Structure formats: structure tokens, C-alpha cells
Length: 120
Image 1: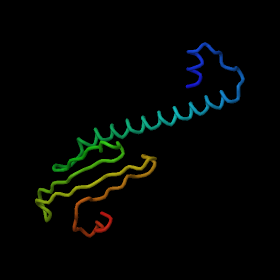
Image 2: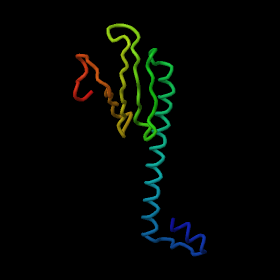
Image 3: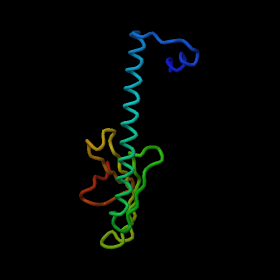
Image 4: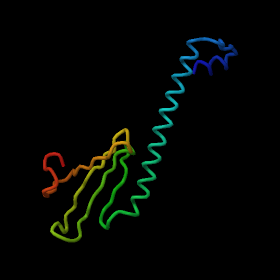
């Protein structure tokens, strides 16, 4: 930002200033990190769009308003032992997604041997 302010005021920046070089490097790192985050979010939203066509009937999911990496979902069971049940769940993707797998936790009670009642 200092370079922009200097340009507006007509002050020429020092050509070999170590402080200016360090500031430029920090700006490049911040910009690179921000671009990486935006690309990750875009990729997650593309996956969300693709998943919509693959969901079984009665399953609904959407990204949270707070973070694209958190999805809220509901499963309306239409057949079988759990017929008529509604199970809510949360799908949380780590910050380093897709390098690490997401976690799924039920936010409503589910009585099933493969679901831990304490952690969901």
C-alpha cells in the first residue's frame, strides 16, 4: 500500500530499498495465499454442484453461510427400519482439503452400531 501512496503523492520509491523488497515479498505471499483460498473455495463449490446430481433420494445438503468448507445436510429415510426418520448431519472439510478427508458427524441422534452416540 505504501508504494501506491508514494505513487499518488509523486514520491519515487528507492530502487534498492531492502524494506521495499521485503514489503513486496510479503504482499506477494499474502496475494498467493488469498488466491489459493479462492481456488480451493471454487473447487469445493464445483464439487457441491456435482454432488447434487449424485445424492440418493431424500438426501439434501448445502454449504454453510459461514464457510464453504462446512456443509449441513439432512437425510429423510423413506424405506427400511428407519423409515420416517430424519437425520441431520454436518460435513466438515479441513483447511487443507482435498489433501485430507472431510469428517461427517450426525447432529441428530442416530441409533446405529456404526455411529458413536457421543461424537456423532
